[in-house]
Length: 253
Image (tube, rainbow, N blue to C red):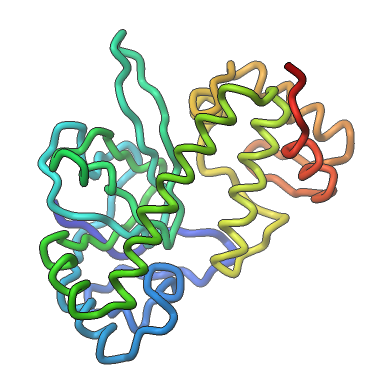
């Protein structure tokens, strides 16, 4: 499946129009997707293997669980939600992927995707065929190292989620998610304190192992305590240190 290009992003970012001629060298996210130390000629070689196509609409699947693993995908605009289906048939959200982040690494282990990836809003992605990426990584050491770092980041993210779900209180879980989005926005040169949540309260609750009501209560409590300003999906962090203190609090046994 091939997809890519542009469409709506944050209001703070220049709108990236659908343009199949945009190259990696021109992309505003290349410093996130690619190693900063790559030379222009190496970026051109990466650009040659990337496939570009139509944007995803809200609810479209990028790939489904069980699909053969053939590519990884760099999110160019919008947000992608990863899910798997539990043994009792329930949907479990396993991650959210923002512009500049790579989705699809779940298929590496068994050559089939173990998760499904769904667009939460209009989104565009760069499809990178893994066989070409693997071959190119052998020729460009910085790209190979960057890919290993991406895999390590994915493993670390999974470990953090498992730890968070097993130990943290509702307040800690919500605070940790907000700080994660804040940090990832900052990495994209967006505001770390003012942003729009691309996911629903239901998806947040599913991801964090909380009910929708609990998520809403926590956000209301944070707002009452002047940690946040909340207007539907729009979030303003008023007290970053206070939010960090909650996220890092030790849960009593």
